[in-house]
Length: 315
Image (cartoon, rainbow, N blue to C red; front, side, top):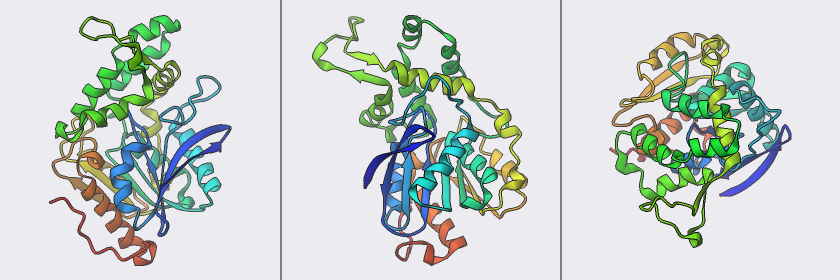
């Protein structure tokens, strides 16, 4: 595994590369997370594919501009194209979940010649988003005073933990340590300062102002018209729409609407049973196997570093 930064459009993007051979695949995360969310799936597919997971601008370890930058899916797609240039790829398999699933569809529409395959997992699309939790985060963006902003967002870490538990159908799949990784980009913890939450004194845990501000700006920018107006007919790469059967955030039936509207590419619809909004977290083996099967179905065994004979499914 190799970690590093690449400067794209004047901003640093953090990315993780794993796997030495096979077709390159770019993994795009959603919210509230970063590239680490792909780790379980990335580790499973990296023996077969050259995997790259990166942090979207404004999230994770990537730069978090608060001025002179528009947080849109179109700009995310343009950054991905330039990141591909920097990494030396003309075409890649594009795979994303949640926000990343929507971005994958936007990229495949804007850059059809650079999309080998498109895989979209529980994507934001049409007008079924943004969900109320994200709209609430976005409203905080308009609080100008940093002091008032931090006061309004003081329970943000606990809200992330609470939201994560509702995003999956089996809450025990996310341990306290896992939840801490989701919260870490937004909180600085200094246990040497002491303090007790029981006493109402959590001074040792301080919100990272820039990181939370950037997420709120991203959330406030979310516009359903990005996806309602997306020309899905421009997608020509074989596409797989994956959806958790127990997703309570985004209606799983939407997968068929996408299949009907992507008219110029073969589309596979893949339901993930016993999974909520984050199938890659709850059933990484099944998601990894679906990705590898889809790649070999359309690109053949030559697309992977070594023959894949199955065996990942967690049945």
